[in-house]
Length: 127
Image (tube, rainbow, N blue to C red):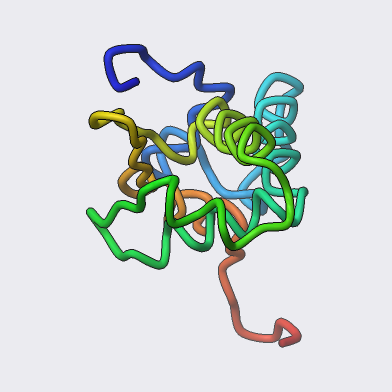
């Protein structure tokens, strides 16, 4: 599976100069559409739980699909579909090893997403 490049829907900003956070300036139409696709991928409870299970392995950690599937009351093809959507959103990647597929969170993607959502606190602002 890693032989194929994932269809990344949106590239979440690499740094603040390339892609400023939400409060830095209004989003243009293309950036808003791309980010909406990432948030749509995260808007499903199964996908959010899958991402959490994968991310909880820590940086560089990975998890076999065989460990993910039993945690849900949905079929294996449904889990595969949800994982595909997370890959297409640019949040995770995978590699097939024998009969199993292993998933990991792409490096820095969650930090960049969090950075996009973080607003700077200044004196006089409300908490």
